[in-house]
Amino acid sequence: MEVDKNNSSNIIDLSRSLQQKETEIELLQQTFTEVGSELDLEKIFQIVSERALELIDAETLLIPLLDKNCVTYTYRGGAGKNISEIVGESLPIELGVCGWVWKHKKPWWHGMLDELSEEEKNRWEQEIGNMILVPLQGKRHFLGGISGINKNDGTSFTKKDLNLLQLFASIVSIAIENAMAVKDMEDSHELNENYRYKLENLNKQLIESSKELEYLSLYDSVTALPNRSLFYDRLSRDIIEAENNNSTIGVLLIDIDSFKDINDTLGHDHGDSLLNKIAHRFGEEIKNNETLARLGGDEFIVVLPDQDQRQVIKRAESFINCLKDSFTVDQNSIVVSASVGVAVYPEHGNSISNLLSHADFAMYEAKNSSIKICVYDPENDHLAQGHLAMVADVRKALDEKQFELHYQPKISAESGQIVSAEALGRWYCKDRGNVPPNIFIRVLEQNGLIDEYTYWAIETALAQAKVWKSGYSIMRVAVNVSPQTLMHPEFKENIDRIIKDESDGDLLTFEITENLFLSEFDRLAEVLEHICSLGVELSIDDYGTGYSSLSRLRRLPVSELKIDQTFIKDMVENKDDEAVVHSTIELAHNLGLTVVAEGVENTSALNLLTKLGCDTIQGFLISRPLPVEKFNRFVEEK
Ligand code: C2E
Ligand code: MG
Ligand code: MG
Image 1 (cartoon, rainbow, N blue to C red):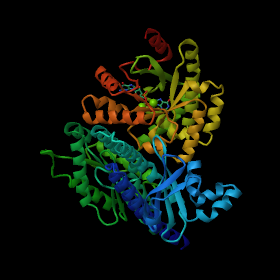
Image 2: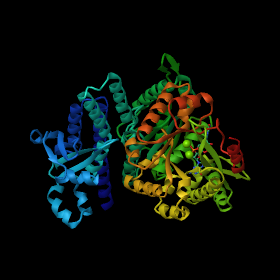
Image 3: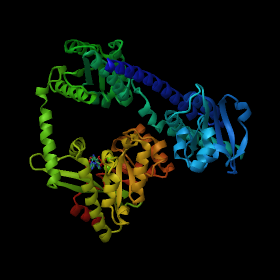
Image 4: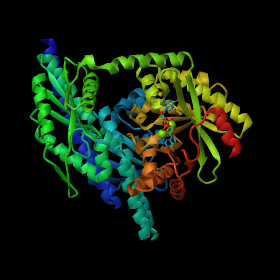
């Protein structure tokens, strides 16, 4: 009985927190859209204060900003109780909590108490419980803060309020700073239309590029269906319920056949519109407590609580059948088919990841046969066996030092000089031939072997860089470091062991992926700061494919951004990709980052990138990744 009670209260909690999350995100999104198209400072203050008031459920919300003289601050905007008396008032900065926040550049909330000295604690104890103040940090200057006073329900502000308000502040600060610049220029009659237009655009771009929301958001922007994150939440809720009631759950993974060809033929916009229509049809098949979500690309997932295998197969048929009538996109009539993989809880797995990977396996079986629907069958799971052999081979490769590094030059777009090299893993396996790094790295990552590999790669690259340092001019070598390794509790120690000499760090760059930015921020910042303190530079790899958030990025010690090759490949022909590359270069430069274009294969791309101000070029046009001897020859001939 005890378990039952816990479970049902878990479910209620989960549902409640989901609902709340959805409301918060909607509010954030609305605010960013509104402020993104606004350059009038007073209006921005009004929008920001009203929304923030609602977001953290405060009685009063104030925006204290530092004055130009830097000795006073003024409450420039506000919402809620008593604001008519406060807004407009100026005070010396050393006064009160504002002064504390500005001095420490840290937010203020009651959790702060634990960090204060006894003396400070006594001083602030009175004020701390009912107030929250987060800093507003602009690109160029420290601006001030956003502060909430008293919660409407009489409780204290929580860590969650703090996180929400910080996220909010980090994004609206851009709009506030730009609007302040416009106001200054208006006051001095210097603002011309051209510049205003540029700023307006910059505002929009910055806010659009803040993909943090996409991550936080629970719905997919193309189809408006729940996204992966909401699907996870829902399925975990359903699993708790099924465990409780001894019931089963069907999971269908639906993949649209040949969608890539459709996308290539119709173009991405029409491809998206088709996906939207497909989602709509699938949506009509869904009943009460069932979930239809988009996992990404052309993959949909359906969760069917309380249904056994026979029922689930029937439902899978109805999803296939609802695609029978053709779709009209851009006046073309298109017929679409799909393949469905089925997994049933608990028979085929009792965790989300198990159910998903087994539905995925079954879906591939369906694709490779003429049957449209396949139920997971462990006997057919040859892959599992093949996979085990692969893990054993990779393990052996690690022990026997079969891995090698090849090096690909990165050159300066301006001078054509080699500025650095990227070390890329290579594995020649006697039985398998050359195995691409995308494959063996994943196996290493999934089997807890990646740390050992990465330290080997860093050591090898560093040793090579030292050789080059003595022979050629100093050149950094970039090593790809998996998020898993970087966030490992022992990473700092291990890296200190490898980078022993003071000048070693200056020879290395770590390429990290965007998704690392989903990690817990404080810890991530601490690790990255440590790496930088050793002289190692940090580069964001495959930028544009993950969940980067510029607001987070600019608070981390990153110095380079590599635009993913997919954008570079299509850029010459596709204006959208060119626009993405262009704005990424501008934004990155604004944040003080160097930009590398990866995957440059032809001179038209090179010329366009040079025109757009890209700093560094990497790609087959310059050279493929080469073994050391060939790389040396390449450098000598250059
Ligand atoms: P990455 O770090 O983005 O590396 C760039 C990839 O693009 C390399 O593929 C490189 O050979 C390829 N490339 C470079 N220029 C061009 C071009 O002009 N056209 C085309 N089509 N491709 C180009 P590679 O070597 O197959 O590596 C693939 C990925 O595997 C890497 O992507 C990286 O994510 C991962 N990887 C490789 N070595 C390591 C490693 O030592 N550690 C870790 N964690 N990951 C690695
Ligand atoms: Mg890389
Ligand atoms: Mg890359």
